[in-house]
Amino acid sequence: MPMSANDIEALIKRHIPDAEVTIRDLAGDGDHYAATVISETFRGKTRLQQHQLVYAALKAEMGGELHALALQTGTPKG
Image 1 (cartoon, rainbow, N blue to C red):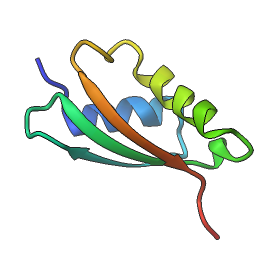
Image 2 (cartoon, rainbow, N blue to C red; image 1 turned 45 degrees about the vertical axis):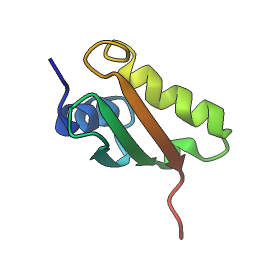
Image 3 (spheres, rainbow, N blue to C red; image 1 turned 60 degrees about the vertical axis):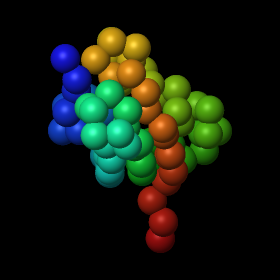
């Protein structure tokens, strides 16, 4: 059963509460998404560390309900 964009956003926000999350369904199948996650939590962390935090929030779903996630992360501007 595919995951909804809302479910992905909720899982990320549960682990990174201040995150601004934007999810796009890339294939219309509920299995392939792109996510942009902006959080102050990422400040001072490498891109790899930022991605690891997001993937840790989704670890139970990756490869199962969520097949693929293209990820962009960053810190708030201004």
